[in-house]
Length: 297
View 1 (tube, helix red, strand yellow):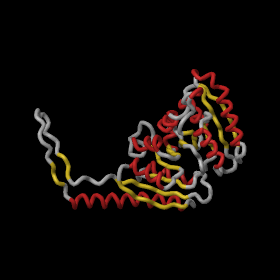
View 2 (cartoon, rainbow, N blue to C red):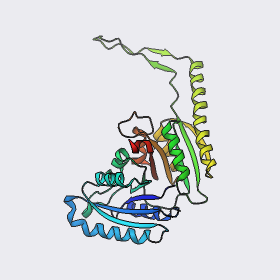
View 3 (tube, rainbow, N blue to C red):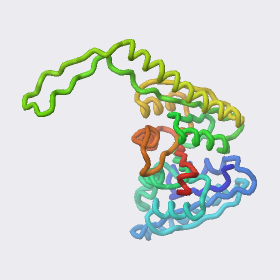
């Protein structure tokens, strides 16, 4: 179960949205939420504002049925939050998508991206405005990391009535013609020569991809349904990040969930450029699930 949460706050609208989201989670008995602010050496005058942000977070969270603790860290935000998390081993890190500017500087924002890249724990990036978690989109590429994300979602404290979609994005269809490369060592640029690809071979490849992709979707849907989460599947073809973000926009998705291969590991499409685009450009909140094995490594 998700019981131990660390929440980063800085007084921004996205930080407030993250606080409201955490407050509304139906956490099990014995749960705790630690709200943290980070004061950098160059932002000492902003201490009072950060303390006010912590007080507000504590007041909001106090209406929830869980233990609330607050703290002020000093140093680089992403580094200090990750270090604190490693010592406390939380079930979830929560942060706003964009930080407060002006007198407090950019305390989150880029920090959120860094936490996704380097933290050893699942990270939930919350975008304002917050209006509940009713529609969840789990994206899968069929990897072990995707299955771990599905398992994590079965433990995530969604409210009754929440529904999930499972989405797999097939690669774009091959073009009917491919451009041949010029020979190495040639000094003159030769005209491009096109070679036809067998349409039958393309069709067989597409059929195989669709069959495998549907199996990925069906497996994740079964996992969610077995845990009592209402789930359906969707299979599309195209650029992965573009299709995921557009689907989330047109289907009023509140949360996108994706697996993570972790920093330094072989990167697939989930934790490569696609996950970065989701964190950067998705119009809703994004949860990147880091595996427990990676946290222990």
